[in-house]
Amino acid sequence: WRSSERHYTLTNSTFTKRELRQDELPTSIYTGRTIEPRWSRERLRNEAATLQFIASETSIPVPQYLELYEADGLFHLTTKRANGVPLDEIRGSHASIATERVNKCINNFFLPQLRALRRRTTGSVDDGLPMMPPSRITCPDKRNHRAQKLCREQDFVFCHNDLGQHNIFVDADNNFDITAIIDWEFTGFFPREFEVAPWR
Image (cartoon, rainbow, N blue to C red; front, side, top):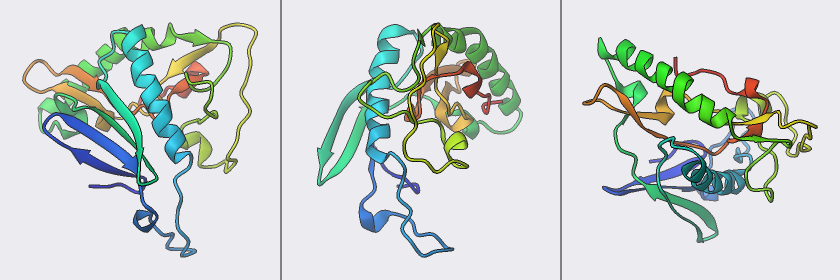
């Protein structure tokens, strides 16, 4: 299946996301022009670097990185398949219980670990990549390049920047424990205020 920016392939053991081919890209209903995803391959490179970084520096559960490769001119990122189900698929009376459980876990366990990762400069863990703020920041601002910011103190913390319920996998059979946090494309070192709480 695919979204407006990615094609996805799920097997019993792996998950692969790739860039879209030119003929798969959406078209604007207003201008008729093709809509090109911003930083398409850079974001995949960022996620590949971040998955390895988070796995080595924290105990936050993330899909195991397998490979980043180019085929037919398109970047592909493959990880092990995440266990559990997305939080937004929990329905009925269990939904509020699951959300509260996740909220406590993120605030008491995950965010402190991310905020303990600090740096004096903004941007990706991969210094070869441009700074890629989340789309809620970039949508009103169409610049393709943003200068890296430097602070005298280590005031920039690591942010996921898209902790929505669709990116949080839980074990529906075991107290809704978080089994994986996915989709780390827009992650990096930013002001701590960048990390909002869309999972609630």
